[in-house]
Amino acid sequence: MSWKYGAILSIIKLFKMIILGIDVGLATTGWSILKKDPSLKNGMSLIEYGVILTSSKSDLGSRLKNIYERVLQIIKE
Image 1 (tube, rainbow, N blue to C red):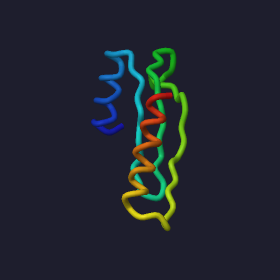
Image 2: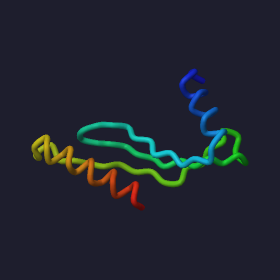
Image 3: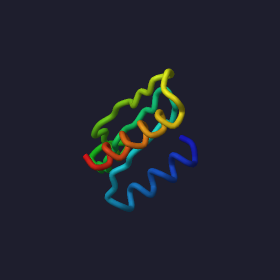
Image 4: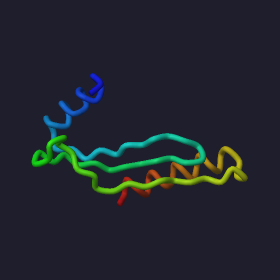
């Protein structure tokens, strides 16, 4: 386990948290929502996950706007 992962787990244990993880990419952006769950060995449970896809035929601004709007939608849900 890396020190960063260990530090993040320590912070999660202190607070009741829901985490939005984003694996940034222009064509494919992965995302996941995790929740603190002390009953599990790693202390977290997966709530939901998915990907945001953008077309290589779209211009850069449109692709970034698409990612931004979808991330906002995920947060609101």
